[in-house]
Image (cartoon, rainbow, N blue to C red; front, side, top):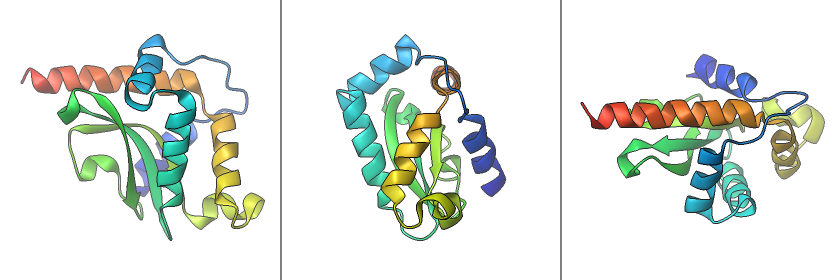
Length: 140
């Protein structure tokens, strides 16, 4: 899981994120969370609940009509280990090595910095791919 987690982590960030979220992903966020602020607060709360080693994820859950969910995993576990029907579209590394040099124990500052470098275009592509996989898995 560690390799796969970090590939997604580094693919989803950019020093100059320019793209916008797709309309489909924007609608999904509003459907589940009501607003961007609520989605971010929920994500931060879940991420901050990870103590020690782990990750926080936004996944598309095919078992719940492709709705977005925020989950956490311990250590280097990848969400699909637990459910083949959850496709991660965003993940943040909550291991100390990810934040300590710049933020010491201020993990919320780390999360705020993380949101400043997320590449919305990449996340939107991940969402579209996940939704397509949900459609394919329900027709099998």
